[in-house]
Length: 259
Image 1 (cartoon, one colour):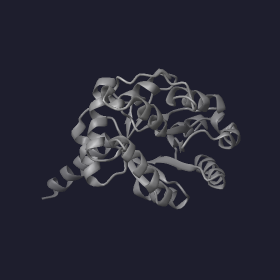
Image 2: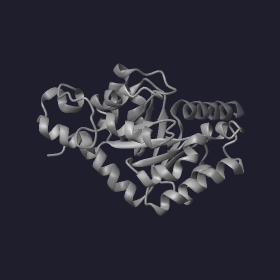
Image 3: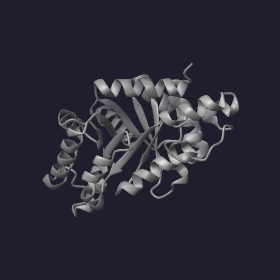
């Protein structure tokens, strides 16, 4: 019998094979925001430890909220903190997103820390939230835990230089292109719609399409989102929850002032 998170992961994998999936980046510490995303119909949420205020304790409650509304809780870890990979999986994350992946060694490290034998060498403990604090059969848990999703972020020159080798090697589920850090690495910080950035993104997307690799990216406006969906992106992160709340609040204030 499948556990709650296993069902969410399975449904997510089935859906992304057929159509694009959508989610927000999240920097909130309030589980209510995560529940709202699920009720709104989003497929996933990226709980951001790289640029957000959360720790493992507050993150646990955000993951619980995602499970309540049946959306995939993806956790973006901090660059270089490999122990966080197994930490967030222990508390129930359905996917791990690793920033600034540069080469095959980075992919191997992600697998090492995220998968149990024979796929990796993640530290084993059955007294964790992901295993229902030992209520789950340990052998079923260790087997099913390897079904979690690994997402690599490509967002720098070194990643671009090694992209062919990484695509050929595989070992991950989704390749996410980070347009903002990519623009910085190309010497035009913030200019994510510059042809230099977009050409690099298109080349990656085309290479992945030939190898049947799922591509994701970040957009902060609808026109850009639609453009990249048409280009083949299937894992689309739209803006950030706090930014969306700000923009909506600003629009409401502006309309009220017109009355």
